[in-house]
Length: 238
Image (cartoon, rainbow, N blue to C red; front, side, top):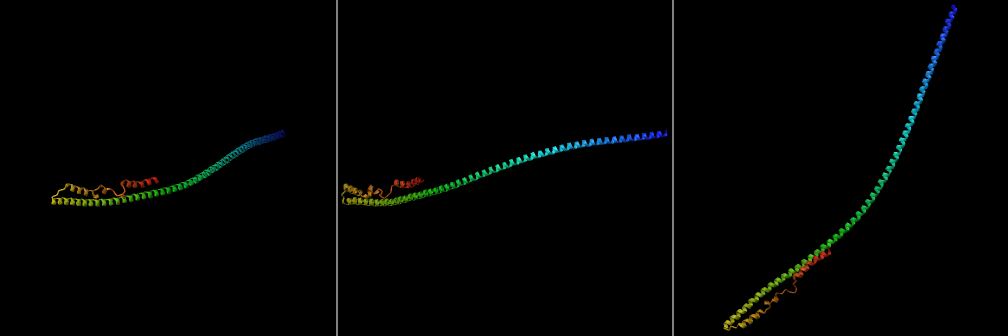
């Protein structure tokens, strides 16, 4: 009985050990399975993360490519805009240079015309002043001649006046002598005295002819006409 009990205990112990070993094996296998499942989940999560990361990287790359394409397109458009602006600026500069050249040509031509016009005006003014000087000189010459003639005529008139006074004095003395002679001879003859007086009055000194202007004396009208002719010539030349 002791042997059976011992064997039973040994069998039970072996059975217990086997059960414990099986349980440990099952636990180990369960842990291995759980660990494998966890690793699989982790791998799946990692794969999903990697896929998502790859997708994000691809999307980022595509966005960068789109941005680069847009930037390149904008740069090309900006370059074309700059080229067009440069061409427009060069065209405007060329037009400005052409306008400037035309303006300079026009200004040179205008300056030439102004110079010619100035020369013409100077020549015209010179001719006008020369004609005016000639007219003034001619008028002064005419006035001097008229003054000389007037002075000569005045001297002649003074001479005639003195001669007339002398002739009147002589006639008066002759008449007085005739009256005294008739008184002395007591022969009063009024007719003879009147005849003698009329004979004395017939002298050129008591005639109006002596007062007429000489033929060499210019008239005032002709002198004024000659004085106005230079001014008329000046106005016609202007």
